[in-house]
Amino acid sequence: MQCYRRSVTIPYIEHVTNEEVLSRVQRERGLLDSVTSCKFKHFSHPSRHNSLAKDIMLGPMPGQRRQDGQKKQCLDDLKEWTGRAILDFVTVAQDRGTYHRFAHAVTHAR
Image (tube, rainbow, N blue to C red):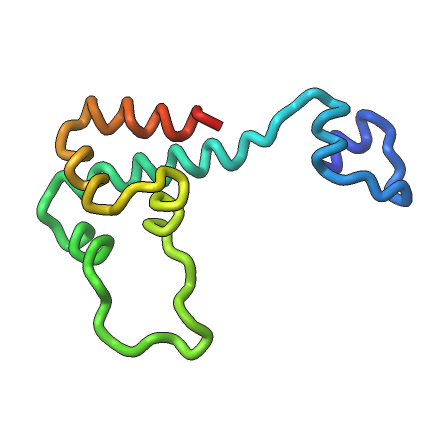
């Protein structure tokens, strides 16, 4: 963002928002799209195989809750972005082609 501010010559004391800077340079936020696609790619491989990674990713962890409360997890982001349950992801991920089309549609729908 600092590079964009320098290229458009916006001084720091103007207090211009990041969204305004992005609109001035005619760019969009690209980092969130790459993070969502990485999360979807990471979910698909372990969910197709019976492994320890799948058990850790999908199963509840033993022990007590943290005192601060539950932290947001990767699966919570996937549920929020799609509005579907995790079991839907697991069934869709069994077919690689269908899951890739599904993940592509979700990540590029914004």
